[in-house]
Image (tube, rainbow, N blue to C red):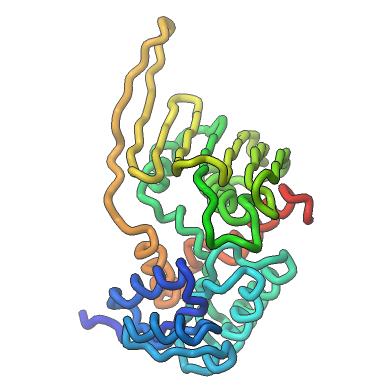
Amino acid sequence: MPNPTPLKIGVAGAGVMGRNHARVAAEMRDFDLTAVFDPDAITAEGVAAAYGAAPFTSAEDFVDAGLDAAIVSTPNRFHAEVGVALLERGVHVLVEKPIAATVADAQRMIDAARANSRVLMVGQVERFNPAVETVKRAVADDDIISIQVTRVGPFPPRMGEVGVVIDLAVHDIDIIRHLTGSEIVEVQPQLVRSRAEREDTALLQFRLADGAIAHITTNWVTPYKTRTLQVATKTKFVVADLITRQVTEYFGQQPDGSYSTRMLNSWPAEPLKKELEAFAHAIRSGEPPAVTGEDGLRNLEVALRCLGEV
């Protein structure tokens, strides 16, 4: 069977994530990376030259570049403006998390995708972490009691507009919704602003519609990176390191306190590549994307509730 014609794809916003997207898309048979937009000419030209793409410093010109698909990795406040313009030109869009800066902007993007019959997918890359997929399989047939996520590390110099809830906790809000298949109905946030203009430490507690509870610990004050996920069900306790991708299942607890353990296979794969493969699949198949605009809106809404902004 012949390979389908590659989709002409562009990247809007050539910061850290945009450059990663450009690197991965350029290596994939699904895509032909033809355009890179960044308002900084040196950045746009440098990234575009690395992959044989055309550089753009105007969003309007990028939207008019004849693309089939685009990745929007601009600062959050521009997601909706660029995303809606692309969707209205018939371009499929993968927008980095969070979907937008406001719930209203997120809804504008969802409406534009629907009105133009285009794919709108949200880049919740941890969904495609093999360790998260392994945990999902391990707990699929069991009732989840609680989820604990720790996502901490040093302050990232690139951050300026948002705090840890939008930058980090949005990943884990999505993981919690993904693992439970349930919506977050109660939030109890505790936030601290110690070194940054926005909150740099957050302890977030949730209750889900299905009765499960969840807790996220996240900060920019820990000198080293930790990314751990712990899930308790009625029959087992599953622990995953999202950096090393090591997943351990504890089960068969006895009255004397003894229990059994086993390591679960977590296949090596680059999450960003799997995310872009899912985007291409949604475009070609017409199936809903793995992470829908509605998923992105709900994740954003929960995060903004934690910040008292909804």
